[in-house]
Image (cartoon, rainbow, N blue to C red):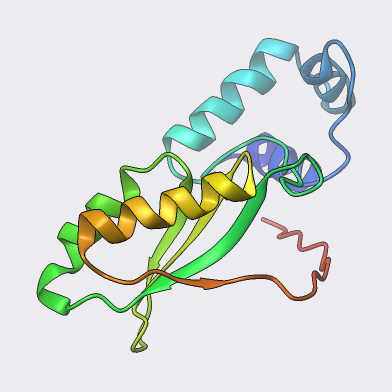
Amino acid sequence: MDALDRTLINALQGDFPISERPFAEVAARFGCDEATVIERIRRLIAAGFLSRFGPLYNAEAMGGALCLAAMAVPAERFDEVAAQVNRHPEVAHNYARDHRLNMWFVIATETAAALAEVVRRIEGETGLSVHLLPRIREYFVGLKLTV
């Protein structure tokens, strides 16, 4: 990672232009060209420095549903169940936790009914209960990490 990579990461954690050619606008800010910015972002993702690049949507404001979920998975079945859960395209951010509910993940769907259906399928496939942990209140922390 060089100075331009760091500059792009620091700058693009907010204030990404909404325009017909946003990468060209970013490039103009940092004295390079559009293709360079796009290639740098692709390279940073491929190298694992960035896990994703894109907007964060408010699924609920768009009519969808989003919920944190947790499962108590026997240790000897953890990898098997993780693979089953992760096969669902509605599932993201699946983590192992040091807790009785040792698998936590997020389910995002286009409707509330679809969320219930995903839970029903996961429970049917794994034979384990999915505990939904709905958001009570949302806080915006504006987290930006300087690299």
